[in-house]
Image (tube, rainbow, N blue to C red; front, side, top):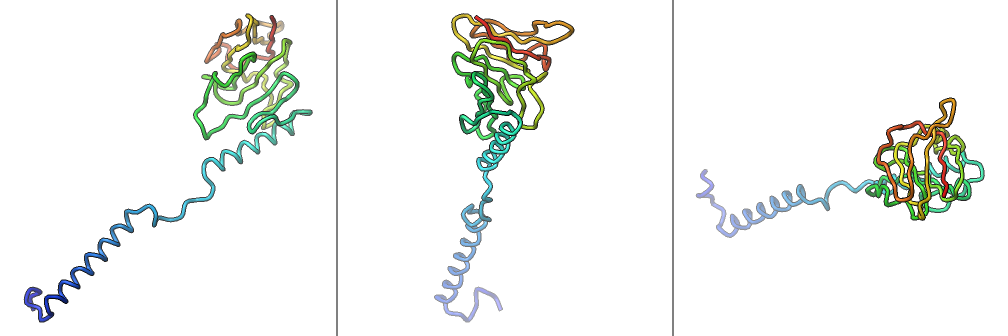
Length: 191
């Protein structure tokens, strides 16, 4: 029998059609709506990054005797020397993270990766400072920013039978990629 000539009364055919349209609309909305999607995972990227930072801070404290935590992502290794664990939940601030009065070195080029900050004048053996994994900073420096004031100098040196000056400069001087990449053994700060 032809659907147009059905024996059902017109009101019933309209009600069936309306019910079908409502069901189709609900079904389409359910497919497109994110609120009906599977529940979100509980381990958000921020929680994952926080857990990673906690593990790396614990590694720093374990491998650097006498170190103390001084911030969410920061450890004082000794007076005047602090290390920062990079956060993956925000864009890297780069050299703007290096506080005034400090000389900062980064593990990677373009001011990224772990950062080691020096405040006091002196000579610092990079082998004395451990990374979270237990390796040291020796031969790990790839970029630096001397943010000291008053013309104070920062110099990176490499031991090649004698101490060779490989990078550095006066206050407010930076290099996003040192030419002597991953060769520094000592950092010196002086007026």
